[in-house]
Length: 284
Ligand code: C2E
Ligand code: MG
Ligand code: MG
Ligand code: MG
Image 1 (cartoon, rainbow, N blue to C red):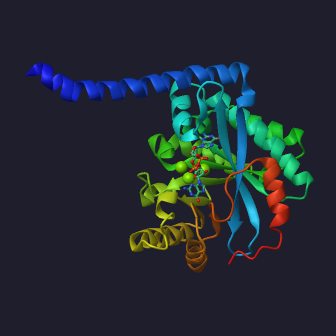
Image 2: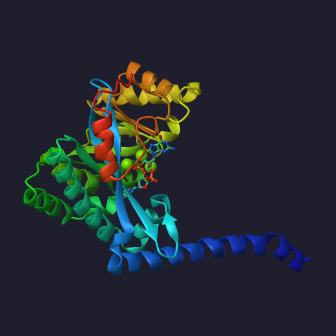
Image 3: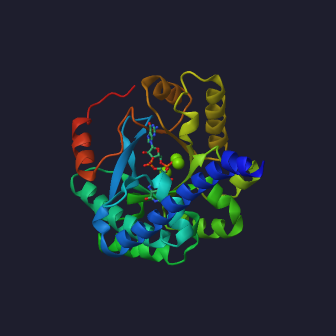
């Protein structure tokens, strides 16, 4: 009967939805509070990208961390999309850029010569205020465009392609490197890649994590590498967790590798220590 159906199907479904909905609401409420009154709950971690040609770390990716008084640690996987929908992303990106540029200056001071890669959302890229702001902050710290680079998720660029191209070109014209993040999980076509003013494809970690065991992943990664090269783009592989994967990627001509095998995302202080400890490490 109807009551039984309700008990069996509708109620569990509803309660799961309700749970997700209330989690979302608490993320929105707490994030708003953090951005307005408790920015110390935010921090940036950094993860090196290793150049497979010369064994040096040329880039580090900035990854946001949020530990909230009420919710505890919340992964960016859980709050970035919510922040975009709730209209907080501009404020988050602004915080990230300020912090990342401060840290970029610090890395330079201690002779760590890297480009700090910042993750941007599509909304950021379309925001005409972003580029002038980045340029002003760099200038204030006496830094050049090589000190900063950007990563943008593939899906975000597809939705409003022409407008995205215009904005990306403005960044490229100032000398910033731009990577398409999570490449392979979206819906890009060859034609779309041809017109995109980016210089790097970042292979999604889902194809890299089990690279040494999965023939299918190997085929995909090799294909992305050759696709990128035919468009004069570099390739970064993320999610490198073992030496086997690192060796395969190097053999196939992948330019950069990033993953737990090399270094987990860590604080700016720990990153500086890591650099000093690994000046002579032979990775391959
Ligand atoms: P992403 O940009 O694709 O970053 C890669 C993610 O893979 C990071 O997760 C990183 O910690 C993780 N990772 C790196 N190496 C390995 C590995 O060897 N194995 C495994 N299993 N994972 C690895 P994280 O830090 O949780 O970030 C998740 C996503 O959140 C990022 O994916 C990015 O899309 C977004 N995000 C992070 N920080 C920011 C930010 O400051 N702004 C924006 N807009 N998005 C951000
Ligand atoms: Mg990224
Ligand atoms: Mg990625
Ligand atoms: Mg990702």
